[in-house]
Length: 255
Image 1 (tube, helix red, strand yellow):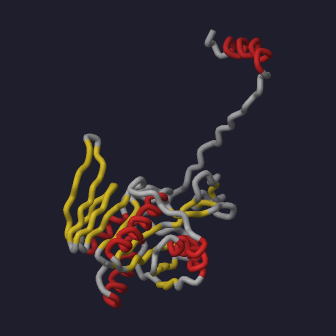
Image 2 (tube, one colour; image 1 turned 90 degrees about the vertical axis):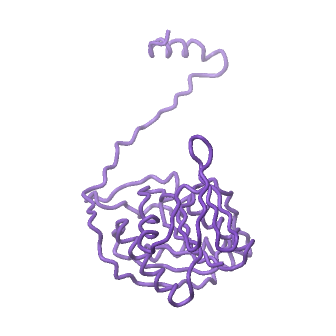
């Protein structure tokens, strides 16, 4: 079984996001980066599927050279092959250009090595949350797609995808090759082992260029909301704080 997982390099949760002086880009000089949570689950799901059925997991990302970090992390948790479609322009591609770059790369790889049975995406990226790239790729490749997937079962060329809805679950039956958008909670991603970390340092990463044209979307500016400062005041210990608490509640109009 051949599985492709597409991931994105995003700022680590909890990072303070600043924008550049021209309000067009995120200032990455002091940011840590990681993989979107949905995509971490997609990598784990792919690793579990090849443990059950055999095969390989290729992880692909579109981004700067520094995105090798996310590919090496995938190597430490069970992925086998790695592709970086480089974008070192400093400007993130829009969903259309990103999808076209992925389609070009998938077409090239499949012509060289054979068709992927499954292409997995995160349901949406943790930063922009556009819900677009996976669907665009599926349409361009003429493959069935389901988003919001919380369960995957594979039997030969039959794929069963389950997703949560308000009243329970929807179950979809597809034929491979197919595209699935995986949602966080489908599994609990494993932690890298020491053996996995050591192996990831030796993983070979295939770097590819894309000729995908720029999409029609144009970024006008990024808006950074004013930071809300929350102050904490210690009123005292035990019963000594009671009078101050009463005064505070009175000031707030509670009493």
